[in-house]
Length: 261
Image (cartoon, rainbow, N blue to C red; front, side):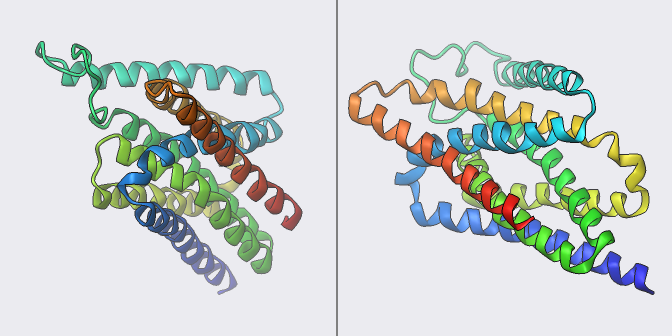
């Protein structure tokens, strides 16, 4: 009976944790409105890079006894996302008129960066589910603290992901729905971890590495080039401050999480 009670706790907090962080991020994104989209993109760059370098990669190195292999997976992941984006480009460029041939850049990228960020976020959510299950299997109180910490930790990153999806051409409704679907990976990871935690342990660093690769690639290859289209000093200062704000928000939540844990 105790086993089933633990599993119910795991399922409940996995569903609630994924949904709450996504809904909180979407609510904040909608509050800022269309005018705030360009600001959200700058913030997203900082949040994605901050999450990758301050949270996901250190955690992957810590979980792995071979950080050189994790680093290799990150590099291969970036290459894989490059190839994936090329396939997306070819799909949209089967004729002579597409964004790759236009002199003026389009308003969005036909969903390419959104697809990549959803893939990476799904991997990350999967690992969050494993962490929630592992904590609940130790102690219910520890599981609750872990789930609440993950919700708080995910909000800045989910806000960045939401901004990327809007920038990529998704409607607000579709961005919310796809983010919620991606959050279901938390439930999948938690369920698998409950029944086969020892078998999944060895894969966690590499799953995290793929998640980090997607964050780095989207921020550097898809978002930053768009920011360079505004070259005036005021815009540059604004973008720099917002990127820094994204990094700082991840750092602060990570700092609070570390102390709470």
